[in-house]
Structure formats: structure tokens, C-alpha cells
Image (tube, rainbow, N blue to C red):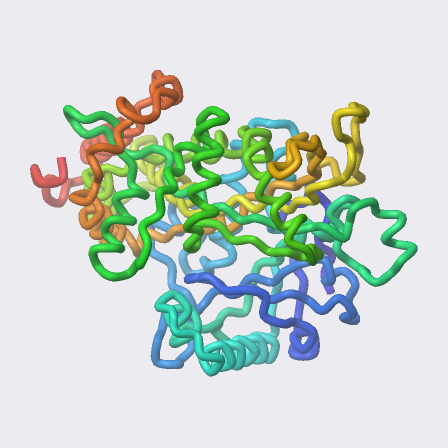
Length: 490
């Protein structure tokens, strides 16, 4: 095995690699799945201790015919991340994108403490084939168990891990890097005494979605998520419409509590609770009681995500039309071979497109809170608490049923901040155009969310469009323009 950052090193960067073969894959078991990735966990008693505190994330195949395919990057993907297209696989570009994404975190040490990825895994051909087979068997088992939901059929029906992908991402488990959050060796009584409260650890994953919305003339700022809910209900893809407004996560105490209540009432795939070592209803309720205060305490994380979204443009369909047109224009120029990627004009365009991708990553990531809702420290205990992992934070809250003050230990991670490829530019535009007409006019900041004015003061996400078009016009001075963008795009 090559040298690599050890899971649990909060300042680690995913620059080194592990190597896994078919024998190693035997100790992995399915841990979860998303639309683009599947996740495997290494067995707690596996023969390689350096892997026991980590997850393995692999890309799902885009094919639905059972054949394996290796991801092919869009020309602009390679250009904006500075990688030779012939060598640009998904994991390489995804690692570059993540480095750029977390590099903008403002708090000292925050990039390493908020991210979950700690390494890159090289799979031997036999290992990749074995892993794909494990995923295929899990998909078959899930379908045979009678899963009837549309989301489950999409995840476990046709798409699966691809044996053609020989590289994967290694992610850190927060439950293995802390005294207060440790869920390992739960049957060891001496360990239980040493690690206070460790038996009551759970996690809550929240999808922030988009904070930026778009300004509608005569109405104010309106939001993408409620409109998308309306679209899903109209198309029969949602049986219940969520009242969750992501922007509330950046609001005052009342707004944050409103967001949490909406997520608990109708979680959909926007909130996921995992009761790692919690066995009773009381501590499950404590997780939910602590959540609003935890979110308020983690405001720096949500503000960080917001900053990426603002820099990457708003949710107006016009923004996505402009991006699609620019991507099409630049792709044709690159195919003709008459571009200078080192020129100042091209550098400006690529920088803006990079910001757009980072913005889309920020709109599709998740915030994972791993929590121990009761580690002591009530009204009579004001002493500071310490954990061996400086990424673990402590916040006080009151339980709803008895009003008792408690202290919650938690770690926050930004997960699923994955590369977005310009191959999807057309689908981004199509979705934005479908959502646009569903925007509910009553959900404007001028009537329901006064704090939004302060949040967007001196910020104009819609200016991204004009800056991108200006940079494109400047590039035409050196390079012959193909065809002017239509009025439809401008």
C-alpha cells in the first residue's frame, strides 16, 4: 500500500493513494447510495486497520443496459481544472474541484475539518470487478425486498457501480475520530466508561439546496426549492410538498427552527437521520431538540456554502441559458484548435466557469452533523469541554419535554461536494426552465423573510451573467467568433 493520509487526520488532503485488490473488497459492505455514487464501508474487523475508519465512494455507471462504462470528461471540464483531457478521469477532476471548493473556507483549519475525503483509492481490475459485483448483488437484494418507491427503483434498478472505474474516493467517518462521537467497540464496558456518553451517537444529514434564488421584477427574491416542489407534485413525483425553505438556515433563531420543523415533518431526501448507537426514543428526540442550536452554531459552514453559491450565479433560467450557450461556443472553438488557454481572455472565462461549477457543487452538497446530544454540561457546568479532535464542537440547548439544559457534542462535515460536468449544461438549463413557471410569488423576501435584505446587501448573484458574456466578448477580439448569442440568451 502506498503512503496516504490516515483517516482521522483533520488536516489531511486527498493527494495520496491506497491500492485495493479483490481480496480487500471482500471486507467491504454496502453503506448507502445516491444518484451518482454508491458508498461502501470497510468491516470493523477487516485485516487492514488503516481502512476501518473510512468509507469508499465509487461512481455509478450512467448506462442502463448492464454494461460498464468509464466516465468521459467534457473538454471544458479538463480545461478549467488544468488536466490533460486524455488523463482526466472522474476521480482526478473531482479531487481538483474539491480542493478548489474547500480552499475558500475562511476559518482557520476549516478546509480540513469540514471535508470528508481523505484519499484516493486505486482499484486493481480484479478489485473493480469484485466491487461492482458487490453493488450488483446489493441492488438485486434491495429490489427483491419489495422496494416500490420511485427513488429506490432509480437507485437500485438499472444503475450500479461500474467495473470500468478503477479509482475511487476514500472518505472519513466522523464516528471514528472523536472521544465523544466514537461508536466503535460498543460492547466493551471499560471503553464505555472511558468515553462518556458515547453510546448515544447519531447523525443528521441536511441538504441546503440553493440559498440564492432569483429576483423577480415587481415581486422580490423568490426561491428555487419551493418551486421545484410544486413541479414535482404537478408531475406526480412527490406525494407531499415540503414547506422547507433552505434560506431559513441562514436566518435568525425563529427561521432556523422553522426550517428544522419543516424538515422533520417532511424529510423527503433533504434530511436523513441515522441512529448509530441510539437505542431509545428519548435520545432520538434529543437529536432533534439539539438540531436548531447546532445549525445556528455552524453558521460559518452554511455561510461558506452561501458564498460559493453567490459567486456562481443565481437560479434565474437566464443564467443557465447563458452558460449553455457559452459552453457550446467555447467547445466548438476548442475543437477547431484556435484557442490559447493561457491568454488573459481565456483565463477570465475559465475562472468564471469554474466559479459556476463550484456554485453548482454548493447547491447540491449535504451538511452532515454527527452528534452526541447529551455529554453533560448543563446550567451548573460552564467549564469548557475538549475532544482529541479539534473539529468537534460543543453547544448548549434545552430539551423540549423537560426544559433541561444539556450540552451536545457534534462534528460538521460538508459531504457530496462533487464535480459537476459541463456535459450536463443542457439538462441544467432545461430543469431551470421547467422550474421557472412554478415559482410561487407569495414566497418573496419582502413578505416573509426580512433578514434576506441584510443577507444580500451589496451582493448581486445575477451579475454573473453579464460578467461571463463580457469575458466571452473580450475573447472574440483575438479569436474569430462563431455566431453571436441570440437575444434569447442575452
